Every structure is written in C-alpha cells, then in structure tokens.
Length: 405
Ligand SMILES: [Zn+2]
Image 1 (tube, protein in one colour):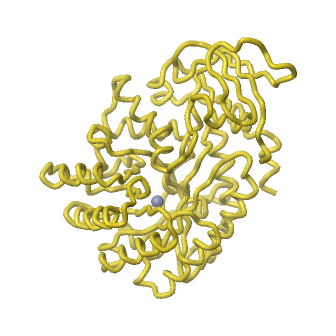
Image 2 (cartoon, rainbow, N blue to C red; image 1 turned 180 degrees about the vertical axis):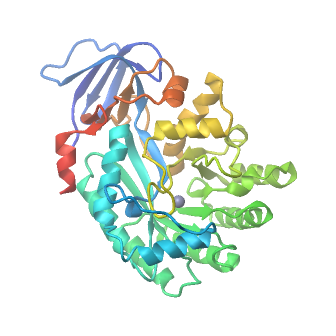
C-alpha cells in the first residue's frame, strides 16, 4: 500500500494530556509517550506542545455538488425542501458543476482543516444517472493515499416516485458506493413502506449499510423513524444504520422523543447532526447519555441549497456546541467526540484513534484543551495521514494539490 510512512512526532499532547512523543511506523501508531531512542533516519516533526487529535471525521457531506471555486450562486430558491430539490436538479444542467472537479476541491479543503475520513452522499437520479458517483469515485481513487472516503448512493429526488432510480442505485453500488441512501419516506416519497422496503432490500441484497436523510418533523418523522428501527432490527443491522438530521428528535415532547431514543440505542442506530441553528435538532447530550452513537457533518457546502460551510469539523463542533448549549469543558468533550471517535464508530472505521496499532492519522493544533479546540477552532493545523504530513498552515502539501489533476 502506498502512502505508508514512518514519522516521529515530538512534544505533542494527545487529547490535551501530558506532553510526549508519537512514533508512527508503516503508517500506524506504534507508541505514545516517551520514545526510548530515535529510529535512525526517521523523519522528525517537532510538535511544539501542540494538542494532538485523531484525524477529524466528516460523517455527512455532499462532495458532488458544492460550488467551491465557481462564481457565487445567487440563491433565490423557495422555502420548501422540494423547492431546493427541484431547483438543484433543474439548474445543475446549466451550471459548471463537474462532480470530479468539485469533489476534489472539497476534499483538499477538508484535508487542510484536518479531516482524514469523509462520508459523502452522492446524488443518483434519472437526470444525472450515476455521473456523480463516477466523478466522486475518480476523486477517491486520486486521493486514496491521503484521505478515506465512503460513498452513499443517495436518491435525492426520491426513489419510487421517480421510476428508474432504484436500478440506478443498484448500479451505483456495483460501481463502488458502499452505502444505500434514503430520503424522507413520507414527505418526499409519500410511500414510507415502499421506500424503506426498497432501501433496506437493496442493503440486504448487497450486504451494505444504510444512511437515511430524515428531515420530517414531529409525528411524521417519528413514524418514519419507527419503520427504520423495525427494519434495522429485523435485518440485525445494529451498527450499520445511520439517520441523518433526525429533526423529529428535537420535538419538545418527551412522550414522543424518549421512546424513540431508547429504541435507537437498543437497535444500534447512529444519529448525525450538523447542528442547524434554524429549527429543532436532535438533543445530542440526551442521545449520548442513552447510549446512541452521535456524529457530525457539514452537510451541503456552498451549493444551490445554501451559501454556508467551509468543511472545518472543529468549527462544526463549535456550532453543535452552541446549538446544544454546551459550555462546560466536559460538555464540549461530547462535541469533540462527535467529530472524532463518534464519527468513526458511526462509519464503522477500523483501527481509528490515538492508540498503538491505529492508523497514524492525526491533526495537531494550538489549543490547551479539547474544549478550546472546539470553541476557538484555531487554524494553523498540521495534518498527518498514515504517517505523512498532508497539510500544514491551512494548505495541503504540494504533492496533495497535484493529486487532483
Ligand atoms: Zn445531506
């Protein structure tokens, strides 16, 4: 495997703890703490007392349709979800959104902030077919040595409501997408049983996980969530199903929400949030207390849906902290967990973390504590992937910049 390197990182503080050294051999962490002697000829990185985190995990974004580096998109889109979906599908034909080029731009941006693992949903529909999947797969291949990317085949415009989409999802899985996506079984598909049977049917047939965008509010969202939980249990898919957004869990009604939280924990379903400031969001503290794996994503970034986002998962931790009123250091530790180990658990990443035997994926930054890293999300980071420095000071390394071409 290319891209596996040896690196001796001196004077860093893993997770904000005691200062020590980290030794990476063949791309994996070998030791943390004092290193008895420098292996001859090894590359040395002076950490200068920086805080060391495992590589950040972007658990939900849309690499195929950002508009980074393109003229500003003047957004005059209507307020409903379906307005955004229909607008995007219509204008995408006229805009120069090449999924390969745009995904490469976002990958480089995310790497510069310290993200070493990405799950991306990629649109599959009867207009664009699997061209988005093919573009992002090309980017994944080009950047394989410097970042891990997991693709969700995502029926953004609906599944059964647009005949032909199911066959395209199947094609996307055969091409290399890992995970089966789904979307608002009631509100968009208007056929919750049909939609979820199709999604979980594909997952069962191909032996894949499931990740469903669930924007539906209140009782409607709770109903769809129950159907997802039923199917996860029936197919013994604990640890392989994620519900993204799950806004219905933000309903201020414990009688509705508490049984759902207990069932999610029991079924082993992870919840992803981007901490939106403009409506109900899943209560991450309560979910974590109940044993539900919680993780974070940027969602869409500077696209036809909205103008925001920069791919910085530490800034995302801050936004989630603000939205959930996390102030104390022990509370902000949860936000940091969501952008690191929580994301890794939700995505089923093996050998992730700061422990011997794990991959040598790290980000070093100037912060005293984990809470400061989230709240202030300082820049000037050093990013290491499998023992190689891939970004520094907000810029990817020259060899990484060259991978896109
Ligand atoms: Zn999304």
